[in-house]
Length: 463
Ligand code: NAI
Picture 1 (cartoon, rainbow, N blue to C red):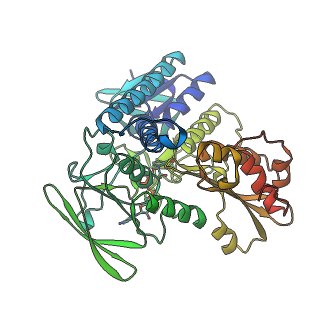
Picture 2: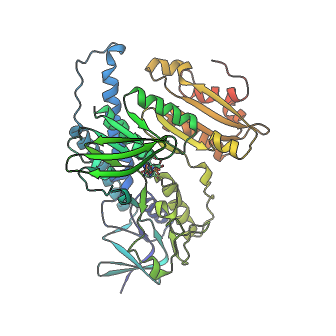
Picture 3: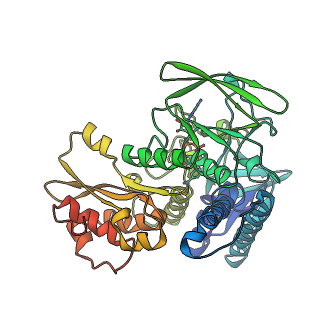
């Protein structure tokens, strides 16, 4: 007889394992099927280890400037292998943390590759599991190359973040293709560890989905640090050798060659929808290859849900986790608060950090919205001057008539933390005036949020 559960979750990443925990909290007998370590890409080869490496990068840069702060350290030596091993430990700790959470909530973890079958069944090896209520697909995504132009990931000269995260030694030089979150974060890390970096982005600016002022601030900061930034660039051909890659690049009408010891592919990810039994169960895909879901995240087959990267963009851990919670609650018969997809914060953890929520100024213009931008630079913040982290700004886009926070964009130290004041405000439909009314402690970076709010009202104090 098949093992029976109320809910079977396929995939133990941040969408799947969070869904399982919420389902278990609601009294549902739950199983998670995972072939690798629990925690998925995020915990093992994504968000968590990269944040550990970015902190090493931060320390390397800080120490190089430490004399200015009255601290002499002598010559700073970096060792990527040591930083990498530390990041692996951090990732492993987190993965074991997920193991613990599964046990705590009495969730059955089934090791192996799950393939769905009709009738809410999942086959794992020779075992067949059966779900009384629902199967939740949370199989995530994986790195991808661009074989069309000769850039197939070969794990030596053409690598992805998967390989970059376990290198003992960095290549002599790196060309990074794609200036989204992955490309920006690794360009930052490699640069701090002394590797010459060329960052190549197809769209007209790096971090193309962010506000144009945020992109410009990062381009300025990266160039100052010696990173070569080529935007609006088309890689037409790649010649992959044994110990180097030569890229033919066209940008602004001019052709150039970029040579590097290795290329890091950071041009997006592919979703894991193959060989999981979608077709057999009647589960359809969208034109872009994501699993088609309705507003309840149910697929085209009743009783099968999809969450996280496979369910569509943004491909972010926190979006997947929230979908996991909402789906678990729906399966348990609750009426969860609907997800506001326009209110998912986006964060890139490079230095300076970039964080945003809502519309960019360009989108406000396109939509012909009546808005007023308010901006406050960290160079005018006493706290930022104290730590020497004066790059960046807070920018708030205020709707003229009712004071709605249309969008907020932060570039600077701890932007990843600061953005949440505006996330709470937007989720609760506070106005810009209401954000400013809250007294912000002095001296803090958060004061820049209040000042940007005041600037949009024509009442900024410190500039
Ligand atoms: P992405 O889609 O965010 O960025 C890829 C970039 O590559 C885009 O800017 C795109 O225009 C560019 N690109 C595509 N083809 C190109 C080509 N042929 N030549 C040059 N540039 C090209 O994808 P990314 O950075 O690989 O990240 C994958 C996913 O993981 C994303 O959904 C991302 O949001 C998520 N992620 C999130 C992180 C975070 O929240 N901090 C960190 C890492 C990944």
